[in-house]
Amino acid sequence: MFFLMGMAAGALTGVPIGPVNVAVIDAAYRHTLRRALAVGLGGAVADGLYACLGVLGVTPKLNQYPSVTPILYAVSGVVLLVYGFFTARSQPVKPAQPDVGDASATPIGNELLAGFRTGLLLIVLNPAAVVTWVVIMGTFIHNKTSWEGIACSVGVSCGSFGWFLLVALVTRKGKHVLGDKAQWIPRVVGVALMFYAVYLLSKAIRFVIA
Picture: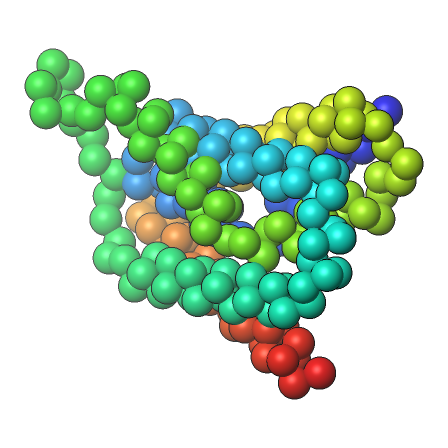
């Protein structure tokens, strides 16, 4: 039951535009599907870790130190604004297609590791995600045991990865359907991410003013 609740939460929270969505789309277009999946896996693991923090009792700390929340929003806003800016400003390029037997081609293991690290860091460097998962876990998970909380967190990772998998497949399909027009997809989502960053910064300002 708690695992399924976590899966639903992981999938639904992935729907709004976020840094990992942007990275998955960019990787699926510019690189390979496997790299995009590795990015999604890294983001999903980080979502599960943050959800676990929410389950294991970060809420009292946030309530004890109310100034922490706006700081988290501000840091996330700055990080995502910079990331969105560089994504939106990136030059449209065609995905590289290395020749068979090309020794300079990136080994699959390195490609997967780089993608996983990117997805993981994009969530870790987005501390506002802590607040999001604390709120979600505090709202839907009551009187849980440690094992139930862990099961929910694992479900979050699975649901989150399921969403990123869908994003990667749709992007890859769209690239083949749209052809050269698909090169603007990363720019569009980069701009959307900048708007989301401004929203986080405004939340931080409202906390300070209030």
